[in-house]
Picture 1 (cartoon, rainbow, N blue to C red):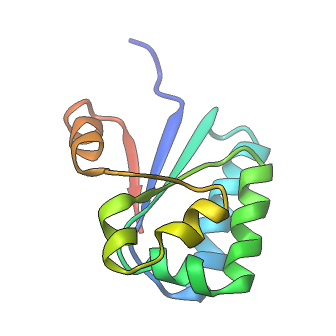
Picture 2: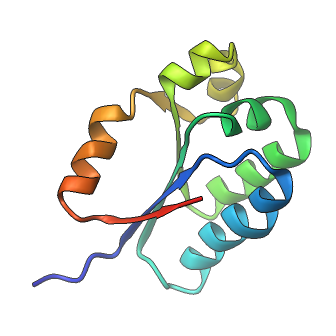
Length: 114
């Protein structure tokens, strides 16, 4: 069996301290130290608004993207919260995540939920 080397991080907690000291610290270090070959950060719920409105978090997003963290956001959440354009302007992929998340879970992918 092939070892899974892609980590998906489902970020649903809009606390900026958690964002800085867990979400972005771990995702960037996971690639920097080679703990994972690929890391995808999925922004879902309240963090979509946090990213759109908080300049410090936007810098952390930029730094994570420069470290090759793939960042994607829930389209339904972004639209309901009125921040889709802001996320897209930050070069964050915005897409419907319900079905893809379900497939990740069904295929036993590595998923960390925060």
